[in-house]
Image 1 (cartoon, rainbow, N blue to C red):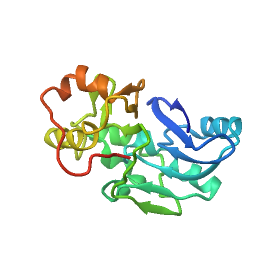
Image 2 (cartoon, helix red, strand yellow):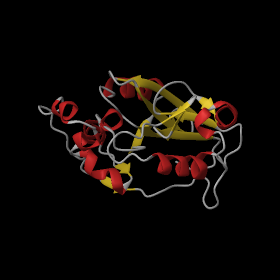
Image 3 (tube, rainbow, N blue to C red):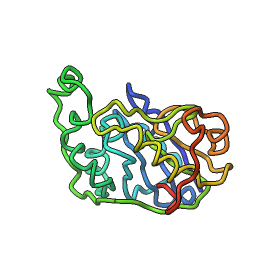
Image 4 (cartoon, one colour):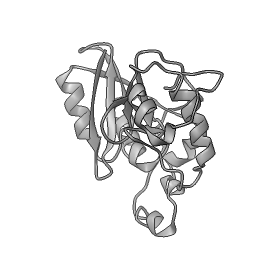
Length: 201
């Protein structure tokens, strides 16, 4: 499998392209701020044909370029229904009015084709965690909709059941593994895998 990525824009949100091999169709994950040029470079280098965009969540640093990326390629965007409204109003995901005002002069719209994705199973040896799990840390819970108990439940349900060798490609920062985070991430200390589906996107 081919996986390539780059940090997009001022937020340095990781954008990825995933394909079975060079010359195949690919999935674009989290096209953040100014991601178009990086996506064009990777798809050109590996002769990839974009088939869809997958958004791990609706924060502006991960969805900034989704409408132009989808529109230019005629492809759908997949997002969880709880985050869909952030595609056209990303300021809702920001904590304070001054931060929201930073985007007052910008207009964001949904792509023409949006598919709500409530969950997916994958067992490829790689986990794209968005802002759920980072190398040595976890996502913020002080943003609107954030909740510490909920993120701990998600970590126990999505991440901890996976094998130690599972590669974690997060929304920011370097890659890691489930094993490294299980043994060294202070936020996972004391958590045990929960019952039920144990696979993430």
